[in-house]
Image (cartoon, rainbow, N blue to C red; front, side, top):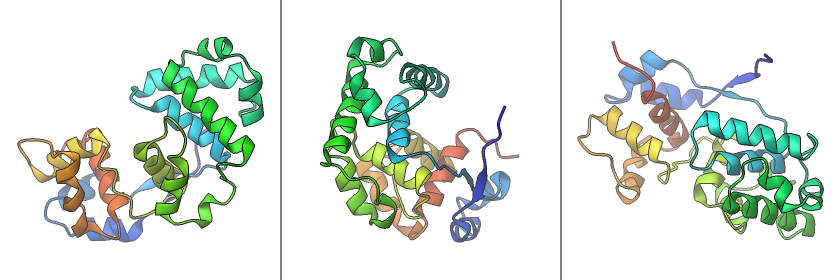
Length: 208
């Protein structure tokens, strides 16, 4: 098994949250934030994000792996568009995910969606660009910002895991809604990505 290269990120967020009354015990238990360093193309990464939408990790990994095999391990817009829908469906893609991947490929190939310079654009512009694709919403764009570009101040309120994790960290009886969670991230600016990451990890961590 090839180990992923990891980078320590959002160090300022770790320090800030370590001093926070609610997050502090979790931060001390979980430790620093490390994320994979990726050199794959934006198209490859976005296709993977689409495959993972609303699926548990194991099922998503299986479908994504089959998709990679279906395109001959060359994940490019051209390869996706030259294959039949039935071939791609054979990888286990739902109709909605297949439609999203093909729409992404078409928009990149036509130049309607430019992805070559995303790392130089603001968070807001990246979200605006990516969400022109049918099937890519704020969640997928936020995952790209956080886990591909390592942007420090993303607050993915549409992610159920973040809402559940936040409730656990804060000791809330009920999970906040998207609307309720949005302002609750303000105290953690400009490190809301770090707060979201610890919310994820809180779901798989026990305090002792």
